[in-house]
Length: 230
Image (cartoon, rainbow, N blue to C red):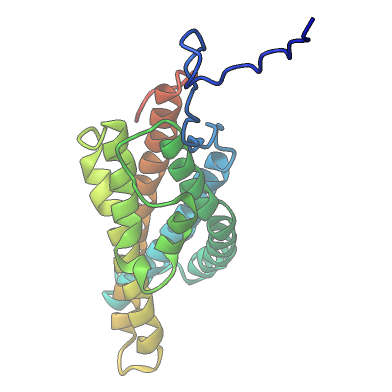
């Protein structure tokens, strides 16, 4: 008797009963996971401290104006307020560098995690918005893009338009006050302090609203507990 070799298994092209071969799916790019930001409180505290410093500077300028028009003079209290402005500004700026930049970077990351339509920039590029010369316009644009992605740009459009621009105007008046220290009249100095303090306070009030609403809006999109917009 002739021995018979076992038949070899047929491949899918030869075997009509074989299951069709599955093609490998292309790799899917994973979105970053949503994480509630921990820098929001620091960003808002920086705004509050800086706002107190702006207020103190403005009051010192008002005392100076009243001194020139000979209506009211509080030189000692003005010195106290000037002393209050320096540490508040310093702490606010330090917190701003350590909290505001990570705050916007984290918001941008969460916007990508939630597949919002904007911003389209990478989270790492969000911090570049606060580096000169981009800092002249990019912070305002970034905040608007985040608000548009949340669908809330119309709810606080005024604060979005004012918060950073008013800050730049305040810095401009402070620079003018510095150069007027050796000018012919100190009246220009105190007027620059008044206007710088005013625009600084306006900037901080609007910034606090923008920071709060962006964070609460992002939490609402992630279906996390929120405290509402202001």
